[in-house]
Length: 71
Image (cartoon, rainbow, N blue to C red; front, side):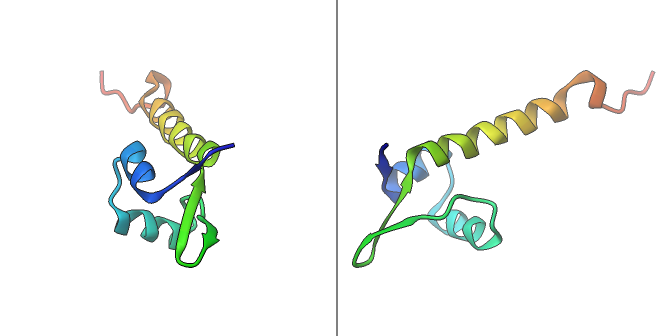
């Protein structure tokens, strides 16, 4: 198991720090774990799972059966 710091999480997701914390508050992003003092980190697997869910949602929405096609 690997713990990621904020810089790694922003790099992996392409999200800004403020957006990550906004999503955490909304309950739509993995919560960080306290590492001591003011340091926090994220579980690598949870971030990968979040990214995978985003990809799957994109693929479901773009599937031909889910599009409203006008013939």
